[in-house]
Image (cartoon, rainbow, N blue to C red; front, side, top):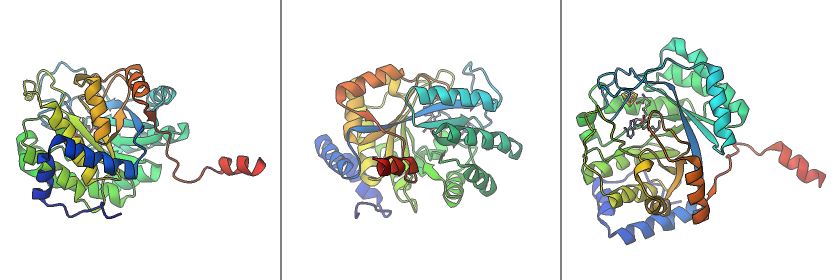
Length: 332
Ligand code: SAM
Ligand code: DTB
Ligand code: SF4
């Protein structure tokens, strides 16, 4: 379809942000309905499989060793523990299980345990996702071969604002990891954070970078900064709620076939804002009471809102037709 473009210009994206709110939401929602069931939301559950003591200096992050956030650090979890949590996530209705590690990048010696986690999650019948920092080409290939469905690696913000937030790895490093993930055949989950003091132009710049990748990320998490005491961004001013919803709407217009995820920061959003974000094109959430280290709305709270809005959790996507379905059809 003609809306899938990879040649967005900065002025065009900035103009979308400047549209009257109702015009922007109408455009985003109209496109949303052409590509997705507007009453279906994909749900993913997160687990921190290695917590804190990260050498990177991301100014928003409670897990950097450079900031005193009182976080208890934990070594890489055992496979069995991870699979227990995956089972619990499945029982509460999640279809994707996302495992996050506070690393700059994984060590090659960690790969066998990570591979076992990926295989175990797949055996449960869940989609798998990992976010482990930068990946080499080989590491990406090994994780893909184990069956990892998605890799999350965020661009976080615009190339221009990036240096204000992170100095220990470059924007180019991030693009490189995304290239390794794509080349290895995994699906890409990549988005960013808003509310870090960036300008509208930076929010437009982030979305433009994502939309102008050779292939759009299948999943685009839009995080609202969670202000954690002890991090340099702890006292950052509130971002206007409507600016946040605009960011979702512009992401939907630029990447109409991608899942746009309403990600971190939902604890600070009321039900009306959730509903507006779903209308603007958000069709995925992190589900369950914890993100990696900070709080998230409780599952029953999300389900109650889904019920009031007539939203259904999306069933697991099947990559190939399930033969049992055809057997049953043939038998009847
Ligand atoms: N260490 C790996 C990395 O940075 O690639 C993986 C885990 S890291 C915690 C994953 C993402 O979480 C970051 O890229 C960032 O976008 C998001 N994140 C971390 N702290 C956040 C916060 N306080 N508020 C919003 N998003 C946050
Ligand atoms: C993403 O974009 N957001 C998630 C996930 N990918 C890994 C992480 C949010 C972390 C929020 C802060 C915390 O809980 O530590
Ligand atoms: Fe480390 Fe990731 Fe946090 Fe940056 S965002 S400090 S790389 S855990």
